[in-house]
Length: 150
Ligand SMILES: [Zn+2]
Image: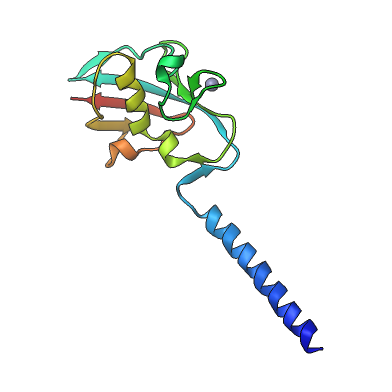
């Protein structure tokens, strides 16, 4: 009798622990998706107020080895462009996708690898609203993002 009570108690603790740990994971603001995302944002790039073209094939090819989210199997970064339209693909086939994988800082790092050294953006305007913490802004599906470098 006493043994079964103890076993019951231990099982309850395990269940509570598992539920608690699951809840803690769900609340982790650093995890944006556990299964991957395929989002598209549109960006405009300005340097000293002058509009620059968004590079095509940004993040594509082995020159981006070591860039954030670079996947050697497809030889491209999860964050990339195909054409010069300004459409940025945020394409993670699997999770977890973290805030750091999607932030403006990572996109800026790709830009700095592509041709010019722009540094990090002084001002980021998302859907018409200025972000108070530009580098940390997490790019989302459908965003219109203007990146202003000095
Ligand atoms: Zn895409």
